Amino acid sequence: MGRPLILAHRGASHYAPENTFASYEMAVDMNADGIEIDVHKSKDGHLIVCHDEKVDRTTNGTGYIKDLTLEEIKSLDAGSWFDKKFSKEKIPVLEEVFELIKKENIFLNIELKNGPIFYSNIEEDVVGLIKDYRLENHVIISSFNHYSLLKIKKLEPRIKTGILYIAGMVSPWKYAKSIGADAIHPLFITINKEVVKECLFNKVMVNPFTVNNEKEITLMKKLNVTSIITDCPDIGIRVVS
Ligand code: G3P
Ligand code: CA
Image 1 (cartoon, rainbow, N blue to C red):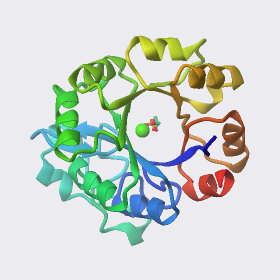
Image 2: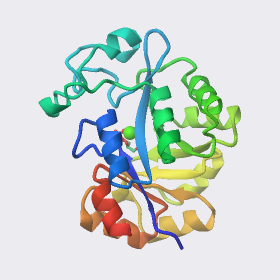
Image 3: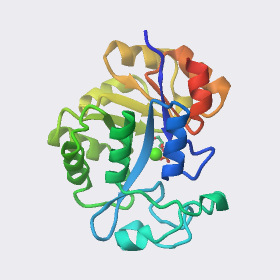
Image 4: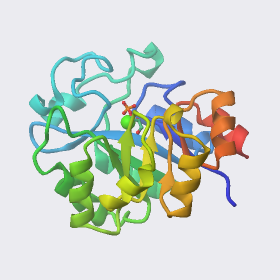
C-alpha cells in the first residue's frame, strides 16, 4: 500500500501568495507530489487561475474575472497582499500551469469554479487544453458543480473527475459512481474509516481537503486516503514519508 500523495492547495499557500508561481515553485521545492489550482474564465475567454470570482482579495485590482480581459488581469500585482517581497507575482493562466506540470512532472488537481458565476463552455475549454498538452493522465478535475463533472466525463472519459463536497454523506462512493466520477474530494472532517474503506474497495479515490496540521494529516494517513490536499506540503511530506 503506497503512501497518500501530497497536493499543495493553491500551491504552498501557507508560505507564499496562493495560486501564483511563487507558491507552485515552493511546493515543488518541498517535494509535493502535485498542486491544486482553481480555474475561472476571463471576459475574452482565457482560463484564469485564481480562487475567488473577483480579483479584489488577492491583487491590487477590483472586479469579477468574467468582466476583465487577460491584459487587465496580467497587469495586476498578485503577491503584495501577502508580502511585499512577492510584488512581481502575476495571476497565471492555465497554459502556464500546464507548462510547469510538464517540466516538473508533477500531478495537477484542477478545481473548476463554475457557480454561482457560470462560465459558458468552461468544461470544453479545459478539456480541450488538457488534450492539447496531452495531460490526460496527469490531472484530475474536481468541482462543487457536479453537472460540470458529468459533462467532462462525456467529453473525455479518460480524464479523472472528483466530487467536491462539504457535508457528511453516507456511502459517497455510490453517488460518485453514479456520475462517473473517479474520486471524492470531501471536506476532511466529514470522512471516517467506513467511508474510506468503502470508497477504496469500490475503486473510488479519496482526496480530502484542506488538511493543514500534523495531527490532522496523521489522521488522514491512518485512514489510508489516496491524496491529502494541504496548504503546508512540507508538513504533509514529512508526515507521510
Ligand atoms: O479542492 C479543495 C478545495 O480547494 C475546495 O475549496 O474553496 O479552497 O477552493 P476551496
Ligand atoms: Ca480549490
